[in-house]
Image (tube, rainbow, N blue to C red):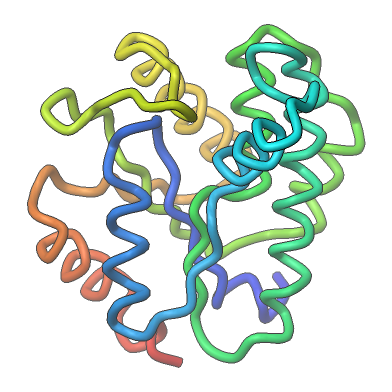
Amino acid sequence: MRMDAERFVVITGGPGSGKTTLLEALAAQDFKTLPEAGRGVIRAQQAIDGPALPWRNPALFAELMLSWEMRSYAAARNMPGALFFDRGIPDTIGYLRLTGLPVPDHIMRATETMRYNRRVFIAPFWPEIFGQDAERRQTADEARRTFDAMETIYDELGYELVPLPFTSVTGRVKFVMETLGPACRA
């Protein structure tokens, strides 16, 4: 396993489960974080009325997410210390499977060559905080199925899934720090 992999910590799960809020809290404590590809791609495509939106062209959307995640991974190599990713490259496969699209070989190769910390934090579906917005159009059922898809792909790729507890943001930050131990400050 590459040395970078242990520094690269993924937080994944379904939409509206508190991932981004947790990452914002980690950033507020001076941890380096990398933003979610999906929201970034959607914002950019909406700004130009582009075709790579999940409700217009899911396959193209997935390719742009992959490019975003690969760029984030490459940028992270030049940053010191632990880094927290709002989703990772395997999420692209979870998305493709969720939408019933085939997974191209190049995306599988990306997951094999660009690895993350063996522990992946996964945020379970949390109905009390789930909500939709202009970028998050998924229903609660789709959010649950997205969680299932992410859980399946990360497990298949040999990651150890660590479910985030249903607790406050402060409690989740504490849980992540305790789970990772001193390595998260390296």
